[in-house]
Length: 196
Image 1 (cartoon, helix red, strand yellow):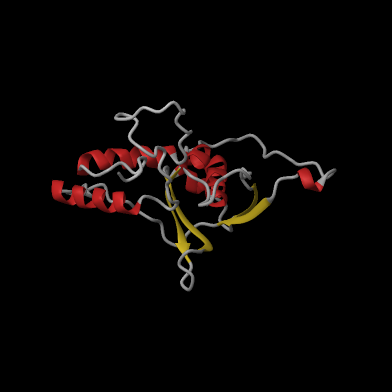
Image 2 (image 1 turned 90 degrees about the horizontal axis):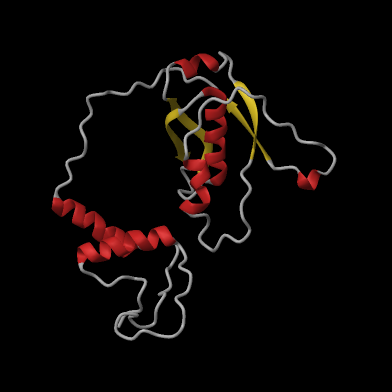
């Protein structure tokens, strides 16, 4: 996914902000993606920047931190790639051919116009989620708990028996915050604490 976001941001720098994009999943292996992406630009003017016959671009792949824990990159690792970018008219940086080991990995992409324009209807209505439906979604999210198993931060409640040992640095901080919120709403135990 890191490479996918790097590709989207490179296209935005070249042609303008993207309103929506979709990477297609592989039909045989659902955990893999095809090497095909559909994207819709935020502005109609961006389409005029894409040549009629398409354009091939070399995109530097995002460098991945080797210390990323099991389970892959999280939101914190992708944060810089999630922010939309505006058109950057400056020329792409060139890499020296002196030391191949220091050069970033390049991804070659081909940007083409779609046969038919994708139009958005402005009259779409927001989802009408009832309170019961929201609770059901929260319950499913709480039971799921993310892609990576969270280890309890405390063996006992720090409120009833304060210990001398400092609290460990939390892993997957954003997921812990979301789970804490849902544990309070659902009146269920917070997964950051061991089951008592």
